[in-house]
Image (cartoon, rainbow, N blue to C red):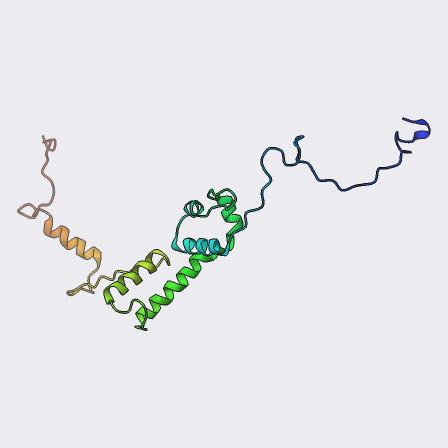
Length: 186
């Protein structure tokens, strides 16, 4: 320590702060190694394509193969896709469901439209889309024909079946088993 309890260098004037370009860490020069590139900037056409493909149910990995970075000419990765196309990915399937739902509703209510000419095609398209994309299912209802004896219970029905299938009791009304081992009375 210096005399009088002062810190070393306490009396030196400070250098004025000048803004400098920050070099990358690790000792590399600015611009050394990989070339400095601009950020990926999606086009309106790419946004529309991503939204449509997302709506069709195409996976993110497959969408990436079709969206090219204009600087490199190579497909983007999923991180870039999710960063730059988050709204399109989120809204694509919602818009597709709304559009097809509107067509399905118009089909069901017989509103004239692009697929109103063939009833079978209309019906199958409607069932397919509702089941696959909107999660709807068909419910099968079974109708029983014939009379059901409402006075009988399941237990009574089982007892009747057992009685019908069981062997007849021994003659003479004795339901006890004969002594199979011959151990009684001898």
